[in-house]
Length: 421
Ligand SMILES: [Zn+2]
Image 1 (cartoon, rainbow, N blue to C red):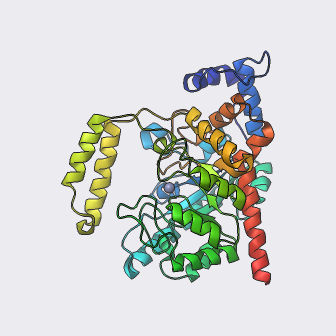
Image 2: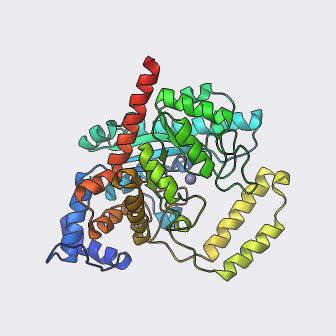
Image 3: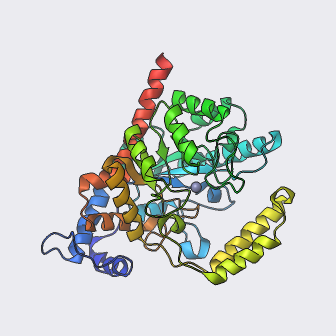
């Protein structure tokens, strides 16, 4: 539900006018900018709005971080809390327990599992403590039931299959804890699959034999298979191996912005054939070509030259390197991507794959956040731009959650069938 009162709309218009173009191509005859925004906000309020990817558990495990409190995104860097979900009219979200890829031995695997379980517990504890405003959601229809009750739906995902380690029984353990999708891999290769961004290139040629067992186990349990961050072969393997449709919880279109993390038109067409869904993400580098920034490139270059080889890095070295990267990014920022870039990607995916195969996964608290959709309180600006470009309420309902719910139901139905065989 939206909390913006109609009397505040002129102020909101002004704010939005700063970030959204004044193009009035699809405004209905005689509709003013104020009326278009009012119409868009009414749609945003009526439909279920579901964001499939936020790394907020990274913050939830920090001592003293309270999801029921409103945080200033510029002071704290935090992008999601329950008050801002309400402000933005965001009805539901998948909080991903994200564990960064580290050493793939028994110790590394058990540390990853412990951290993953800690994050899942923090999500569950937070929803229990705030049961007057949010609820843990496990089934597709739970989001609608919670919305009816005026509560935000909190789903759980896992970003990076690393915490599964080499033990297939962990998949069921995570399912029992409430996990409903698993992103097979993250920025580096793991035991399940190859990453789109591993500096050493591919290792398994897509999904490994163990990764295939994991996919089958996810199919049996009713966990959605998420191919975001996987390389192209992972996508094709997942389509071939999974009995259920797959998702990309936070990925964009490569024909619009050239990046390994984005999906080619061929992949988009296959995603449509598969019945799956691609959830658009709010990361500048995946949304538009980065304009040249020579000072930043020079600073990155000298940092890279100063770093030890990866296999000689201690945990402290890695943390310091990450901090140095962040400092350079903060010192030489790239011009921001905008909500228009987001809807350019949506337009393209709709053209190639159709309206039934696109959704939204903002990646807040994992790098997501652009001009006009900086945090959860601003997600209605996506709806306003969709209305401006002529999308119908039915289309917008599909984009904002209907498509994902359809896939989720299909995944569950297939699990039921497998279990009864
Ligand atoms: Zn990610």
